[in-house]
Image 1 (cartoon, helix red, strand yellow):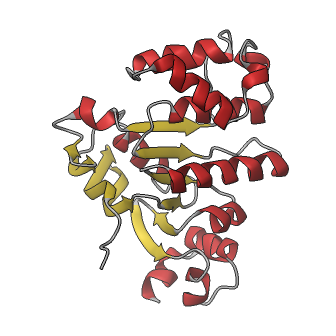
Image 2 (spheres, rainbow, N blue to C red):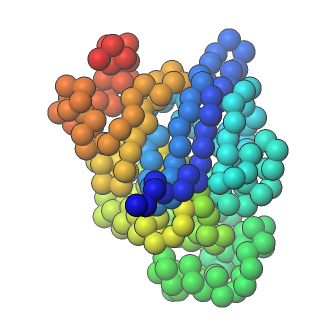
Length: 251
């Protein structure tokens, strides 16, 4: 009998304060191989702070982040070598061409067989006609595809996506979602995804975590979780988390 898929991310009792403000309050969760986990909640819930601690940009006040077998605090370079990241607010250098960006980041990640790997991701994300185009003149959808290609260069075991489709029109966003889902199922990694688009979350995520005031309030399958809490849709549940978290906590 097969056991559960391997854990690619383990977050244990993670906390972060800014003075008197508690941004992340003792949260614990896991992401497994081939799993897309949605990290949801209103603005200020602690999502980006959590992602920044997983990326090693912020140091937690307490708690532990493990990527595969590596404790981020003790073996930072090994842990981050297994990780990559895409966010709409973190574009690639616009004065570099697509191929220059991929080569630059591939060298940072010490990707073996870099030239061959660049050609693989260019084909995977249908970027051949843009290889000599500067990223700054590409459309939002094209830039997102280049960012995803960059993020897949090192074949990450953990892919962190912070609102990756926020600036895209619906048809391009759908294509990006399908590509990420395909890459996740085919590869050896898992995905932690933040989004305010509840339709997108239902389409992509296997499991969701709702954050409220830095704590995990709810967790479960995005397709059944609303009914479990007396709501018709995931969007209704999202609004309730934003407006009535104490009522949900009592459910």
